[in-house]
Amino acid sequence: MTGLPPTKRRALRGVAVALVRWVDTHAGVDTEPPAEKRIDWLRVLPFAFLHAACFAVLIVGWSPVAVGVAVALYVVRMFAITGIYHRYFSHRAFRLTRRWQFAFAVLGATAVQRGPLWWAAHHRHHHRVSDQPDDVHSPVQHGFWWSHMGWLMSPHGFRTRIHEVQDLYRFPELVFLDRFDTLVPALFAAALLGLGALLDAVAPGLGTSAGQMLVWGFFVSTVFLFHGTCTINSLAHVIGRRRYATGDDSRNSALLAVITLGEGWHNNHHHYPGAARQGFRWWEYDVTYYVLRALACVGVVHDLRGVPAHVLESDLLDAQAPHVG
Ligand SMILES: [Zn+2]
Ligand SMILES: [Zn+2]
Image (tube, rainbow, N blue to C red; front, side, top):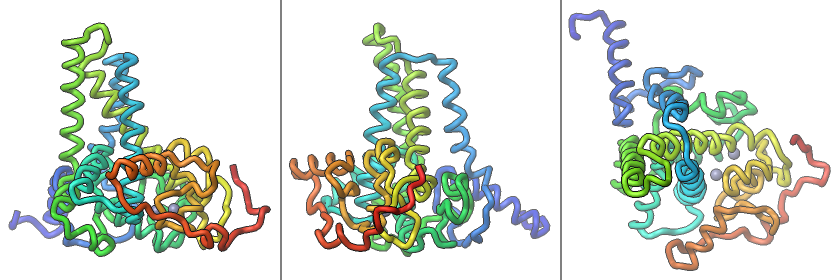
């Protein structure tokens, strides 16, 4: 490569780094990419494949058990994102032992939303600069598609903002999951393939197969999970009601709370991000919080942080706050 002109050398290095990053996200992190709206198509090819593979339902067909597994894995992994990646790793809204922290981090990694450090670091940054020009997934600043998925396909959005997660970076097991963030999803997909093959062999009456379990349980479920999660970035600052003057455009949406197991109460959350709950009123259903309460009852999670009474009543907007859907 030494005989090549510098421009060609740089281009070749770019291709090599993009490919290595399919498995090792630490590759090339020494360079700080500019905050430009450019999609790294080579690096996100596996992400595009994830979507395209959903069309394989036309080949493998469907069965009640395969669709049921897809729905169940959506719900369980949505909890892993909202309860663990978001409320635990990003906001430290409760405590876990180190073993449970790792076990839940692995569960979160099955959601295929990269590693816990990358996720938490970007999210903490979002709270610091919410809806300001530096907020990479603000729909107010950057529009729907960029805030929904464009930002995480760009070289700028790729890197883990390590300075945001120094408290998590001291756990080598979390750094490992973050660095090799396709390992857990690959094992998870293989396990589903194995489950389908097993069911096909021992319970043929179910009408499922290895291919069905892979396509429905992994690809379809993961794509719905991805877009469901991303509505909090692209829509929760646009649709719904504002209860609190938060200095950004965050809103409370009952619809988004259904899709995301309670994260739709996003204006509440921006008002007091450190709480384990996001539904502040009794009728604001927050399934993630109910699960966390149940896990606290059996001693798995500790010290769930609540919302102080004075916070509930502070910075309230008047009853005529804008309502957009
Ligand atoms: Zn937000
Ligand atoms: Zn948050």
